[in-house]
Amino acid sequence: MTKKIITDILAVSGIKNVGFCAFDDIKDNLLDCRAKSRIPQNAKTVIMCVFPYKVKDETPLYLSRYAAIPDYHTVCGEMLEAACKKLSEKYFQNTFEFFCDNSPIPEVYAAAVAGLGVKGDNGLLITRDYGSFVFLGEIVTDLAIDCKNIYQECMNCGKCATKCPVKLNKAECLSNLSQKKQVTDQELKTLKQHNILWGCDICQNACPMNKTARNTDIKEFISGYRDEYIIGEDTRGRPYTWRGEKVIQRNYENLNKK
Ligand code: B12
Image (cartoon, rainbow, N blue to C red; front, side):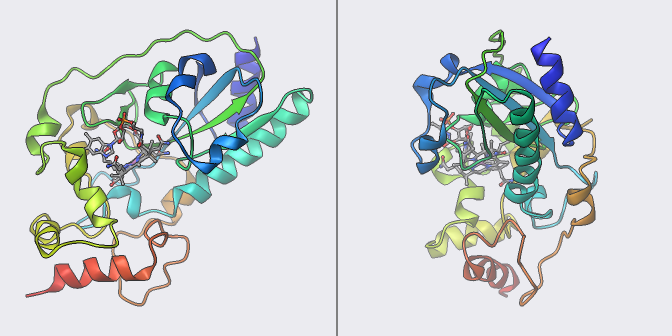
């Protein structure tokens, strides 16, 4: 019953894909970050939320899909904040804290434990309806909810590893390279060779489970879609601003170098 009430409350805030993970199942794998101190005392449940973000079927030319829409930290953060407010009104004796990305929760693992999808070889959560083109966010609470651990991994077809230029070697991940402040000439060459301006979707585009991924209905992502970058544009609210203007400008100049 509690699950149904919570799912309905979240739906009112536009969060339609929700799963439940026992805090005990992830408490030994928390990530070290400042946000850790916000985890409620005596946390019992992590309410995992999926935010689909694919706007168009066509792949953007040089931006990854996540970089062609407004910054998800803000969009998903606002939806999660509204949901927490409603949950606190209903369950006023309990505490609800939301996180998104900047989170101590190992989000992919927790979402898989909650049964929202499977963990892919590329380290990403792959959902049935939206493939891996989803962001994850969560609400951690001291409200006890009955949870089953239904963790599963993908079918290991190997297509993501075959297509990935660095064979899924995390240390050399091209998404990571594109967001680094300091890069070597060789790294810039690699980014140019793969036409990468910001983020990388190569492993995701290769995944057979993404072939039928549905588009998002989150209106902020749809209306704010912009799949090109223009030097000097107003970058406020875009996902590539967190590193400062210089990093994206460097990548742009790198791509346009003769
Ligand atoms: C740090 C981080 C990154 C860093 C990783 C730095 C590094 N070398 O480890 C960088 C900038 C590379 C990155 C890239 C991307 N990220 Co990221 N990232 C995170 C973050 C904040 C923490 C992950 C982590 O360190 N977990 C702890 C370690 C111990 O767990 P792990 O199981 O050993 O490894 C994880 C990651 O390291 C990841 N990983 C990161 N880079 C790479 C590269 C390769 C090749 C592989 C195989 C795996 C991998 O795989 C595991 C799954 O989490 C999470 C949010 C969170 N709080 O969980 C988002 C998160 C995993 N990222 C996300 C996204 C969307 C991406 C990108 C798709 C963005 C893009 N288009 O470029 C890429 C995908 C790269 C990939 N194949 O995973 C989403 C994933 C949603 C989903 N469907 O699963 C998350 C959950 C953020 C969110 N709130 O939505 N990310």
